[in-house]
View 1 (spheres, rainbow over the protein chains, first blue to last red):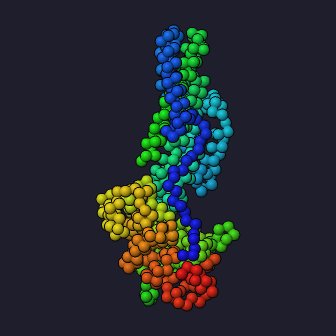
View 2: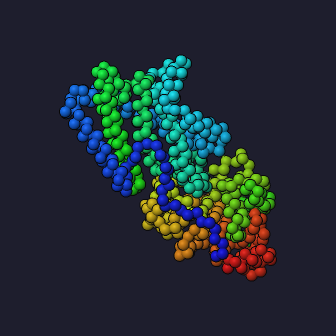
View 3: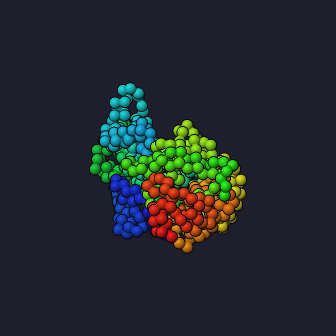
Length: 267
Length: 248
């Protein structure tokens, strides 16, 4: 055989999407980080416990005051991430679309949203659009967060879909499947594995950013803290507690994400 | 084999295809008959894969006409999915679906496209897996299979659609030498059953054993065509002679 055609190597390694933002997700190989995670979470929990027991006023009072806020924080985060995933899926599909109009809309959306700070977007949707349509604070908050994160999610979906070898789409289409059928049955299930880690990352980042919604009169964790502090004038103590609670939640969630990742890569 | 009174399966008329400045297909005109087995050979970049991929519109041609089983696929109005249901394709890089078991790989298009019930599809899939000799791997994921086995899954997957025409795009080029035989064996079996086949390959042994016609392409054009014997014994064109001396 004389002709050596460049053979498309079938890449067994999973493609990795590098996303810089977000908390460090501990992995088993990374021993240092793993320890850092442990030190942080045990340290944070120990400090919370110590403060609450040794100085129940105001620390225990703060701890009792903020759980409503934690629930709201989770509510905003989960609703926004679900909506963002949906927006991201369609944005990602739009970004790879050969249809110029669809591609254009998706690309402009991503550019515009990524160019405006989230805080400004929150103000904009709540106050500026509030003059036209009067949206409840919670709804504005979820819309703003998901519209913002949808743009980032869109890029994750796009990268995830593009990481699947193009022979997969060709094989599916050559069997007579339509483009949507090929996407649903062949491409997206494979892309899902690749996008899960960055989506987990975004989830944790979104939870942290959700503290911004406290300016919209949404009683999330931060706002509950502020309410407590302004009544009792214990700013230092309250914000210490709030920061620790955020830290514990984020550390816990990033651990969860890494466990999920591990389980997925085993399958 | 006589070609009289036989239906034409694929009609290729004055087809051109450009990749930027490069002329990938240069005025190709060709008929492929029902039941015919045609082998396309040619150097790298000669347009043979492009020609093959144009037949199920994985490549869109820039000029000319391609009619498959009476349907003009160069016409944008033609529902290409309907045409592709009737054309099986086997790729150099297998392209089996790694997230599905061997059985589900073969079931997928049957249920989604042909709308067969899962039970019916499974029956057909198992029969085909048996035919390509890997029924015992039905519930494995492709990652656990050798290249030769994956390619046989890909062939079974294409056959499950009951195609009228099978396209093979260098099906053995990505395989380790010891696995080429098992894939060729399946293809020979298929050829002997009367399947219409267009095969881009350099396996001249395969060409000699089953093909009715060999096509030599270079620079996007068909340079010479004839029986395998003709190519082995006395090719007329200089370029063909040179190429044959290189691959044999």
